[in-house]
Image (cartoon, rainbow, N blue to C red; front, side):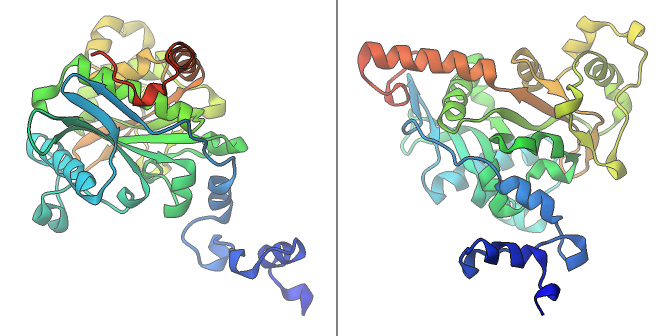
Length: 321
């Protein structure tokens, strides 16, 4: 009888783990939808650490994590206004009926929001959706994995953070708002000891031919090192290397990049292999990867200097615009 016991159940029992904590394998041989090795990889790693609550203020604007269902719903309404009304995303019946952009990942994410306090109640004017490794373990995958293989990013148990659903209200699209969001994001990285940022960066319009110059430039100048390189899923893979390297005008190519993608590249971002068409959002997606070593170190030094000088947690201190 013991020889027939599945290994995935037998080993935890040998280690005297409580039966309620034993998780059966989910490999294809057991009828599961996700391979067991991936779920196990998601759960590996240290638990996130915290340095305090994340809150920053600049004039009339405040950036922090959403605290209530109402704030998350407000962030989803902003996403709907930008992605479905301003741009050309195709809403499902449920999304269109509620006029909110939502999916199965939202309940497991942190939602970084920018609040405008000139009105009462405060209005959500910017949002970033954040999904850490330990959160993705609860939902079963990252959103990015619908388009890209990221198994190389999950090696070693380091904390990784997926960035997604980023948008800003048209009236607030300026460098000040983005700088405030990135400053808060830097603190979040330190709070949770994040080693790598990644996510889908989108070109408007799903025709690869229209983005040949930008795609070729990214492939030839910003391709991620092999040890951390994502790759577009085989059935959705679109070759990015469409123009010979000697024919690429770098200045023209950089101007053809979406502003957010240019921002990631300035932070040292690199690109995965292959692009993917997202029919729902009418975009062409590439996978961006940013190592946080330098970003986190710079912020940690500034954070420590402020604590030494004032004795106040930087996240709770008003910051100038």
